[in-house]
Image 1: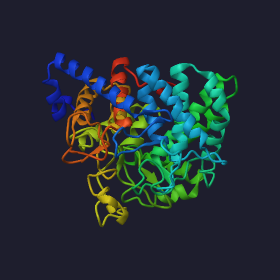
Image 2: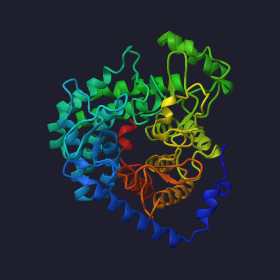
Image 3: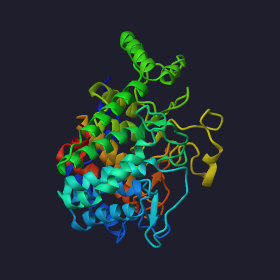
Image 4: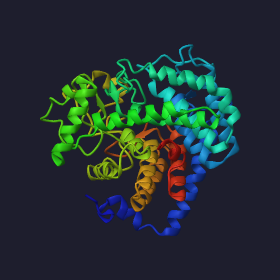
Length: 438
């Protein structure tokens, strides 16, 4: 099903904006985003936020994501800061290969807060290859190679049952106050990118990346096998899917005893666990699945139609997990009340994250939905322009219903992914992902 963009409230509003005004606003948005990124730049790498009361640390996931937007600018200062971020994180790598959640730029201390940070290793690898693609600097990759191999090996050990997918603890990735767990979509899709990035870097260094290519294809296949459901439309195909699930792993097959609710869904499940699964739409995981080619043409069309139809992109792109989890729901946790963060329509629980909006725009571009991408970019600019006290605050997240900015302002990844979205529309494709698409 295709939704007419003219019926989209945001589309209609942005379409009414004169082209010259839209172009001028984008020029200003780019300049504002570059200013935020430059103020986040520190000798040790990108701070999470330039705000005095915000995040002074180099966060592994934030810095990896920020790298995508910083590198497409071609700005020497921002490219150098990307490299500094990777060096700082690598300098603090543990003996077993784990990349810490963050490193404080003031003290050099690492944090032990939260359940874990499986995606720290993933973004550490992916950002190294993005840096290689942008600069051609093989000497840096060569110097970092032992760290990268240890980071990749640590990830393989997160497959605790040899199923081929990563097992992630609750709140063990970017959704650090949310109840996704075990075989998590986001981490495993990103694992596909990390494996392909390792292969690309190995090949560039004259080594053989074939083993990592094979692992990436295996992970992508198992994501589609376990987390994508098309039962009502093709009973024979669903039967084959169940048969392969049973052959590969009995526990995966037993998950499908939940036949009353595990039927057709127009998006990848956010997570699967021991005979249970998540119901909400994970914007990050699904957008990455599109960008990495894990989702085929039909799947990406259904994902993007669903995101629009249910309003996950309204009033701004895009809500992290939707619909929100309410008290009394199976996956509600009392820790959602911590600092009042994860109440319904807030933070991960239905809150809007501008950096995710950048990935959403890029996914629309890759899917060929250019007109909708244009309109959603306008909405993303509006989200970053909003502020609690002033314009252009580039806030961490916004309330999922009111659209009012919350969290800390002057976020590096909010600014960087706006730049990345602008670049994707201009070049007609999302930078770097072509290599990681296999």
